[in-house]
Amino acid sequence: MTNNDILRRLRYTFDLADTKIVAIFKLVEAEVDAADITAWLKKDDDPWFKSCSDQKMATFLNGFIVFRRGKKDGPLPVAEKQLDNNIVLRKLKIAMDFKSDDIQTVLQSAGLSISDHELSALFRKKGHKHYRECKDQILRNFLEGLRLKYRP
Image (tube, rainbow, N blue to C red; front, side):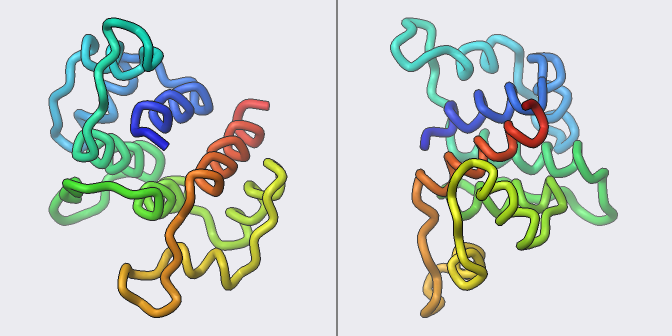
């Protein structure tokens, strides 16, 4: 999945206006203007479409965690330079304060059943012998399940 697609889905699910997205970026001391957000939210074939970089998406997800759970003591999280679906899923899990059962419920509501072992493999470190790459289908179903839960 592209960062733009993830951002579009999260924006719709949580009813985030452009100004709210700008405010989410500010929570982690990042500056983004409304024109960038508008360009990121455009359809891929739109001439004004602009691709959202991994670092900007990671910054948004860090801000989304602070937005949903509040700011914690210590330094602000540093945005990753490279994102993959596993990191996106992990950050959304943290932002939503989900446990394994919550994630499975959300996935099942979108029509995808996943075992405890498969789920825990998605949150392991790369290089671990039981690490499993999060495919687009799993992330897409998770985002769809979130939409069904928060904006039916």
